[in-house]
Image (cartoon, rainbow, N blue to C red; front, side, top):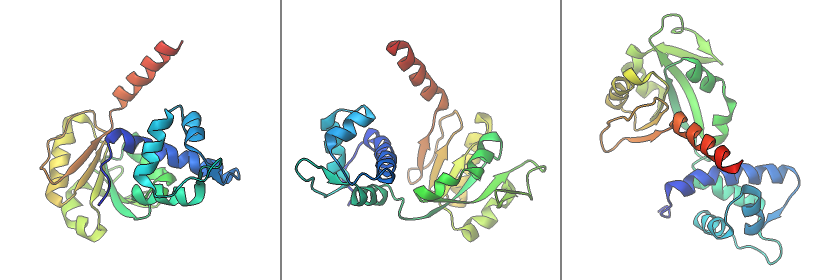
Length: 209
Protein backbone atom coordinates (compact mmCIF):
# COMPACT_ATOMS: atom_id res chain seq x y z
CA UNK A 1 0.00 0.00 0.00
CA UNK A 2 1.31 3.45 -0.91
CA UNK A 3 2.09 5.78 1.97
CA UNK A 4 -0.36 8.61 2.55
CA UNK A 5 1.15 11.63 0.85
CA UNK A 6 -0.38 15.02 0.15
CA UNK A 7 -0.98 16.59 -3.24
CA UNK A 8 1.74 19.16 -2.48
CA UNK A 9 4.20 16.34 -1.89
CA UNK A 10 3.24 14.67 -5.18
CA UNK A 11 3.81 17.98 -6.95
CA UNK A 12 7.32 18.19 -5.47
CA UNK A 13 8.37 14.64 -6.34
CA UNK A 14 8.94 15.28 -10.09
CA UNK A 15 11.08 18.30 -9.13
CA UNK A 16 13.29 16.06 -7.01
CA UNK A 17 13.47 13.47 -9.78
CA UNK A 18 14.47 15.95 -12.49
CA UNK A 19 17.15 17.48 -10.29
CA UNK A 20 18.53 14.08 -9.26
CA UNK A 21 18.78 13.01 -12.90
CA UNK A 22 20.54 16.26 -13.74
CA UNK A 23 23.24 15.95 -11.09
CA UNK A 24 23.68 12.24 -11.82
CA UNK A 25 24.61 13.20 -15.39
CA UNK A 26 27.09 15.67 -13.92
CA UNK A 27 28.80 12.82 -12.08
CA UNK A 28 27.38 13.17 -8.57
CA UNK A 29 26.90 9.93 -6.63
CA UNK A 30 25.42 11.04 -3.30
CA UNK A 31 23.18 13.87 -2.15
CA UNK A 32 22.08 15.04 1.29
CA UNK A 33 18.69 16.39 2.29
CA UNK A 34 20.24 19.77 3.05
CA UNK A 35 21.89 20.01 -0.36
CA UNK A 36 18.68 19.02 -2.12
CA UNK A 37 16.67 21.50 -0.06
CA UNK A 38 19.06 24.35 -0.83
CA UNK A 39 19.12 23.54 -4.56
CA UNK A 40 15.32 23.57 -4.85
CA UNK A 41 14.60 26.35 -2.37
CA UNK A 42 12.77 24.12 0.10
CA UNK A 43 12.97 23.56 3.85
CA UNK A 44 15.28 20.73 4.83
CA UNK A 45 12.72 19.09 7.14
CA UNK A 46 10.17 19.03 4.33
CA UNK A 47 12.68 17.43 1.97
CA UNK A 48 13.64 14.83 4.58
CA UNK A 49 10.00 13.82 5.08
CA UNK A 50 9.44 13.64 1.32
CA UNK A 51 12.42 11.36 0.82
CA UNK A 52 11.32 9.11 3.68
CA UNK A 53 7.88 8.76 2.06
CA UNK A 54 9.36 7.45 -1.19
CA UNK A 55 12.55 5.64 -0.33
CA UNK A 56 13.91 3.25 2.28
CA UNK A 57 17.49 4.18 1.40
CA UNK A 58 19.44 5.29 4.42
CA UNK A 59 21.79 8.21 4.06
CA UNK A 60 25.50 7.80 4.80
CA UNK A 61 27.18 10.18 7.25
CA UNK A 62 28.67 13.23 5.52
CA UNK A 63 27.49 11.91 2.13
CA UNK A 64 23.73 11.51 2.13
CA UNK A 65 21.67 9.13 0.00
CA UNK A 66 22.97 7.37 -3.09
CA UNK A 67 21.45 9.11 -6.13
CA UNK A 68 21.01 6.20 -8.57
CA UNK A 69 18.71 4.03 -6.39
CA UNK A 70 16.95 7.16 -5.16
CA UNK A 71 16.02 7.97 -8.77
CA UNK A 72 14.61 4.45 -9.19
CA UNK A 73 12.55 4.85 -6.02
CA UNK A 74 11.01 8.11 -7.28
CA UNK A 75 10.28 6.62 -10.71
CA UNK A 76 8.66 3.58 -9.12
CA UNK A 77 6.58 5.67 -6.70
CA UNK A 78 5.36 7.99 -9.47
CA UNK A 79 4.51 5.09 -11.75
CA UNK A 80 7.10 6.00 -14.36
CA UNK A 81 8.28 2.40 -14.44
CA UNK A 82 4.86 1.32 -15.79
CA UNK A 83 3.67 2.48 -19.19
CA UNK A 84 0.10 3.82 -19.42
CA UNK A 85 -1.49 4.39 -22.80
CA UNK A 86 -3.28 7.71 -23.22
CA UNK A 87 -5.21 9.69 -25.80
CA UNK A 88 -5.42 13.41 -26.58
CA UNK A 89 -8.92 14.81 -27.01
CA UNK A 90 -8.77 18.15 -28.83
CA UNK A 91 -5.93 18.51 -31.33
CA UNK A 92 -5.63 22.30 -31.28
CA UNK A 93 -2.39 24.15 -30.56
CA UNK A 94 -1.99 22.67 -27.07
CA UNK A 95 -3.10 19.17 -28.05
CA UNK A 96 -0.74 19.14 -31.02
CA UNK A 97 2.11 20.35 -28.82
CA UNK A 98 1.48 17.40 -26.48
CA UNK A 99 1.48 14.98 -29.42
CA UNK A 100 4.89 16.31 -30.43
CA UNK A 101 6.31 16.23 -26.89
CA UNK A 102 8.75 13.34 -26.43
CA UNK A 103 9.08 13.68 -22.65
CA UNK A 104 5.87 11.84 -21.74
CA UNK A 105 7.42 8.46 -22.53
CA UNK A 106 10.04 9.02 -19.83
CA UNK A 107 7.22 9.52 -17.34
CA UNK A 108 5.25 6.37 -18.05
CA UNK A 109 2.79 7.90 -20.52
CA UNK A 110 2.45 6.63 -24.08
CA UNK A 111 0.13 8.73 -26.25
CA UNK A 112 -1.35 6.39 -28.84
CA UNK A 113 -3.98 8.55 -30.58
CA UNK A 114 -5.61 11.94 -30.87
CA UNK A 115 -9.31 12.70 -31.30
CA UNK A 116 -10.95 15.77 -32.81
CA UNK A 117 -13.98 16.88 -34.84
CA UNK A 118 -12.06 18.96 -37.39
CA UNK A 119 -12.02 17.23 -40.80
CA UNK A 120 -8.78 19.06 -41.58
CA UNK A 121 -7.07 17.07 -38.80
CA UNK A 122 -8.95 13.77 -38.77
CA UNK A 123 -7.23 11.07 -40.80
CA UNK A 124 -3.78 12.61 -40.51
CA UNK A 125 -0.84 11.84 -38.22
CA UNK A 126 0.98 14.14 -35.82
CA UNK A 127 4.41 12.85 -34.85
CA UNK A 128 3.34 9.47 -36.29
CA UNK A 129 0.31 9.42 -33.96
CA UNK A 130 -3.05 8.97 -35.77
CA UNK A 131 -5.90 11.46 -35.36
CA UNK A 132 -9.43 10.03 -35.33
CA UNK A 133 -12.87 11.61 -35.28
CA UNK A 134 -14.36 11.72 -31.79
CA UNK A 135 -17.30 9.62 -33.08
CA UNK A 136 -14.93 6.65 -33.29
CA UNK A 137 -13.92 6.84 -29.61
CA UNK A 138 -16.27 4.08 -28.37
CA UNK A 139 -15.18 1.72 -31.14
CA UNK A 140 -11.45 2.28 -30.59
CA UNK A 141 -11.07 2.67 -26.83
CA UNK A 142 -10.67 -1.06 -26.09
CA UNK A 143 -8.47 -1.62 -29.12
CA UNK A 144 -6.17 1.22 -28.04
CA UNK A 145 -6.07 -0.14 -24.47
CA UNK A 146 -6.22 3.28 -22.79
CA UNK A 147 -7.50 4.43 -19.42
CA UNK A 148 -6.18 8.03 -19.47
CA UNK A 149 -7.37 10.96 -21.57
CA UNK A 150 -5.70 14.36 -21.87
CA UNK A 151 -8.48 16.88 -22.43
CA UNK A 152 -7.44 20.00 -24.37
CA UNK A 153 -10.76 21.29 -25.69
CA UNK A 154 -12.53 24.66 -25.24
CA UNK A 155 -14.32 25.06 -21.91
CA UNK A 156 -17.80 25.14 -23.49
CA UNK A 157 -17.48 21.55 -24.75
CA UNK A 158 -15.28 20.12 -21.98
CA UNK A 159 -18.13 18.61 -19.92
CA UNK A 160 -19.69 17.01 -23.00
CA UNK A 161 -16.34 15.50 -23.99
CA UNK A 162 -15.79 14.36 -20.41
CA UNK A 163 -19.15 12.55 -20.42
CA UNK A 164 -18.22 10.81 -23.68
CA UNK A 165 -14.86 9.73 -22.25
CA UNK A 166 -16.38 8.34 -19.06
CA UNK A 167 -19.02 6.38 -20.99
CA UNK A 168 -16.25 4.95 -23.16
CA UNK A 169 -14.44 3.63 -20.09
CA UNK A 170 -11.77 6.26 -19.41
CA UNK A 171 -10.78 6.23 -15.72
CA UNK A 172 -8.42 9.21 -15.57
CA UNK A 173 -8.78 12.66 -17.15
CA UNK A 174 -5.94 15.18 -17.25
CA UNK A 175 -8.01 18.30 -17.78
CA UNK A 176 -6.49 21.41 -19.39
CA UNK A 177 -9.87 22.99 -20.14
CA UNK A 178 -10.51 25.99 -17.85
CA UNK A 179 -13.65 24.53 -16.28
CA UNK A 180 -14.68 22.16 -13.49
CA UNK A 181 -15.72 18.69 -14.67
CA UNK A 182 -18.48 16.65 -13.05
CA UNK A 183 -17.62 12.95 -13.17
CA UNK A 184 -18.60 9.76 -11.35
CA UNK A 185 -16.77 8.73 -8.22
CA UNK A 186 -14.63 6.05 -9.87
CA UNK A 187 -13.09 8.51 -12.35
CA UNK A 188 -10.03 10.55 -11.38
CA UNK A 189 -9.68 14.12 -12.68
CA UNK A 190 -6.55 16.23 -12.40
CA UNK A 191 -7.18 19.86 -13.36
CA UNK A 192 -4.39 22.01 -14.73
CA UNK A 193 -5.37 25.66 -14.40
CA UNK A 194 -2.91 27.67 -16.49
CA UNK A 195 -4.50 30.96 -15.40
CA UNK A 196 -4.03 30.08 -11.74
CA UNK A 197 -0.42 29.08 -12.37
CA UNK A 198 0.22 32.39 -14.10
CA UNK A 199 -1.39 34.25 -11.19
CA UNK A 200 0.97 32.50 -8.76
CA UNK A 201 3.97 33.38 -10.93
CA UNK A 202 2.88 37.04 -11.16
CA UNK A 203 2.34 37.22 -7.39
CA UNK A 204 5.79 35.76 -6.69
CA UNK A 205 7.37 38.28 -9.04
CA UNK A 206 5.56 41.17 -7.37
CA UNK A 207 6.54 40.08 -3.86
CA UNK A 208 10.15 39.34 -4.78
CA UNK A 209 11.02 42.63 -6.42
